[in-house]
Length: 403
Image (tube, rainbow, N blue to C red; front, side, top):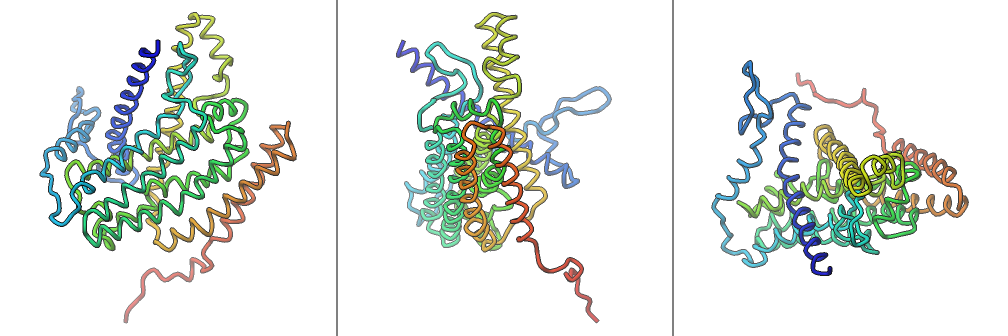
């Protein structure tokens, strides 16, 4: 039985890896098409389509990721003469591997297996949340050594700047996650999801949710915090001297990590795979087991929970694309101010609110949720009002007239 269990575990790992890389490929197409729609322009629409009667086309552009992968795969692989060759070659792996193994402890759904485990989770370990935080922190090594190993001043500056950004936001990110751990009183991801079967954490911890969303966007260096790719200042950033598949691996890292962090957010704050009536022993589970039998009922229930989890992750990913289309890139000093002067104090306030409400109302979930939600909204309103520009819009000179 042990060998069978190990084989099943290996198969799970292979499926997760293939799924993560496939999601990356087609998330780029989804993002480019969505950005094109939001900015009133034409996106990729040439590489592959299904012709329909009347001259119409379906899924035009859906082979664009395949074409780009082929182009990068066959592109000449150039290593700079003065680069540290082996570190230069290994740097993309240091970036992409942590992005993929984040998925190992995430419960993607609930489908009980024969070994008291979950078919839709690779490893349900006692320190699942600590594992996620540790793995996300490892990604900074890939950025730092990529900039250093290229032996280019611009790449080096890009690597240092990317490392400073990621490290600055990790503290606020960790404190936002700590609030969820305090609420669930467990580091195990499956127990955090189970604790939200009555109420999702986004209600009592609305402040922690906002902090996590902003900090995770900066952690994956996405717009408006994509300062590591400032062409005007860094000639491209830490990956300036990388080409072909090495550059593609850094590109892959950004997208896989973005979707993974959105999945972590769905698990921590949006109830994971749960939905009203869908939880273990709920209306849907009982009905399926009664109508289809326990084994088929559990299989159908597992697929439904997987779809629910992926829909929540997709909604957060769409929000990230929306942010990229609408908010301009921040300056570096604004980035540092937001991380150290705003998000970190807010995260400490969030921890204090959670601690006080859980001690004051130990057995009253509704009171904890109500007080936590109201306190979080008040804090967000106060901070937002304080960060507005003091200069009235009517006094801003957009175009200066010349005589």
